[in-house]
Image (cartoon, helix red, strand yellow):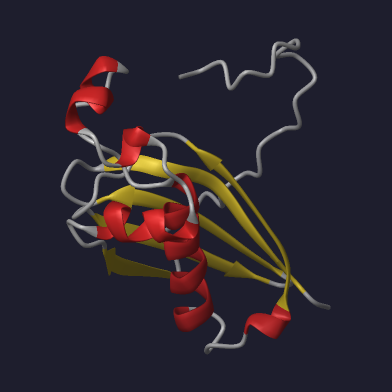
Length: 142
């Protein structure tokens, strides 16, 4: 964790998107299921980090974690269904920074700020009050 296998310099990375300095316009709770990581394996990701408790402990987690792409999709769905009235055609791009793991069964609270042409968001796990996605940005048409 923390190296990503990149091997290059850490300096020069793009500045993270800044979350507005005000209360969110809405907050959405999205429950994950205890078996969600096992179901997500059907996408072809066989990484034991998401299914094997002993492997997860060996790499520094207390138990298997949810796939990052699943957490990302959970946030995208919360935004599309609650802030965009189920209309994904408005979206031109998504950008996030993962900051902590989600465990299967956690409730992910997505805080959403709406501005012209842009939705900012942050996701946190309700049970641990841990920010799991930070500096989220959903760019919109026009």
